[in-house]
Amino acid sequence: MRLLHTSDWHVGRTFHGADLLAEQESVLGGLADIVADERIDVVVVAGDIYDRAVPSAEAVQVYERVLVRIREAGAQLVVTPGNHDSAPRLGAIGKFAEAGGLHMRTRIQDIDRPVLLRDDHGEVAVYGIPYLEPEVARHSLGISERGHTGVLTEAMNRVRADLSARQARSVVLAHAFVTGGEACDSERPIAVGGVEQVPGSTFDGVDYVALGHLHGAQELADHLRYSGSPVAYSFSEARQRKSVWLVDIDKGGLAGVERRMLPVPRPLAKLEGLLTDLLADPAHDQFREHYLSVTVTDQVRPVDALRRLQDRFPYAVHMEWQPAGGRNGESLRYSEAVRGRDDLEVACCFVGHARGGEPTERESAWLREALETVTAAESEKER
Image 1 (spheres, one colour):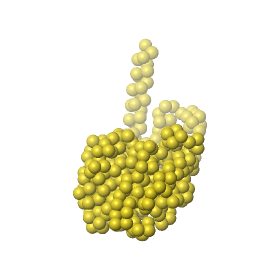
Image 2: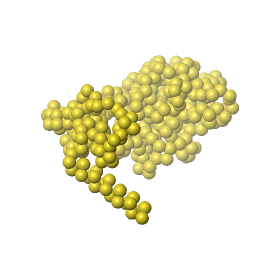
Image 3: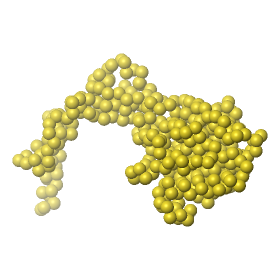
Image 4: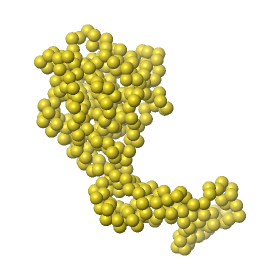
C-alpha cells in the first residue's frame, strides 16, 4: 500500500495581507497528479486543514474542490483536525463522507477506532489522533496526567491496545510538537514554554507516524516524520523546499519513504539596502515576481517607502526600517524628553526620534495646525 503524507494546508490563510487561495488550490490540487502518477492508495492529512476554526465560504469551496480532485485521481483520504481547526465542524459529515472514501477522525472517542484499509497482504489500520487540548482531553480520556505528553501517551496506549487485537500493519496521524522538531515563525504556539513538546518515544509501536503542526519537512526517525506545510506562510520558510512524503507499506510494515517536491507558486526572498539602491539596482530585477520582505537601511526613514517599493516590486508585502549602525541619539525617559519644551517641540522631537530625521517645514506646519485645532476645541469646551 502506498500513502501520501501531507499536513498543515491552512486553507484560507493570507500572507502579510495577500490572498493565497489561488496559490493554495494550485498546489493542493496538484496532489491529485501525484496520486495518479505514483499510484497512491490513500492520502493522509495530519491536521490544520483550515487556518481558522470558522473558515470563509471561499476557503471551504477550495477545500472541497481539492478533495474531489484527489478522490477522482483514485485515492481515499484520512483527515484529522489540528489546533487551527474546529474538530466538530470538520467532522460534521464524517459518517456520510466515509461512503465516498473520505474518512474523518475528529473525535477523542474515535482515537482507537482505525480506518481499516486492505491490500494484498491484509489490513492496514490508520488511526487518527486529532489535536488534543490537554485540559479538555484529559477529562474526556479520564486521566489525571496533565500536559500534551499525558494526553498523547494515553491516546497512544489506546491505539496500541486496539492494535494488539488485530493482525494489521499500522499508521498513526497526530498533530503535535515532537521533541527534536524544528519550528518556524508561522506556527501558532500550542503551549507556553516547552511543555507543548512530547518525546518521540510516545509514538513507539506503530509502523509509521504522519505528524502535523511544524511547517518544515522533517525526519525525526525513519517512521516518524513531519511533511510540513505545502505552501510557505512566513519568510522564515524562504529556504525550505515544500514537499510530501510517499510512504510504502509492505507485508512486514514500513518498506520505505520517498520525498516528492511540490511546486512553488511564488518564491520568497529578502532584500536589504538603501531605498534608492533597492529601487534602481538592475540586479534586483529577478525579484519582481517574488514575495519580498525588505529591510531599508537609510539613516532617515524614507517617506512612503513600502508604496515606492511596490511600484517596482508588486509583491513586496513587508518592510522594516533598520538604519545602518543603529539609530542616532540616546533613548530618553519621558520626563527628560518633554522637560522645558512646548507641545510643538515635543511633537517634532517624537517625529525625529521615530523617523531618524527632523520633520520638514511642511510637516512642522501640519503639526502646528493640528495642535492649534486641538487647543481651540479645548478652549471652546471650557466656555
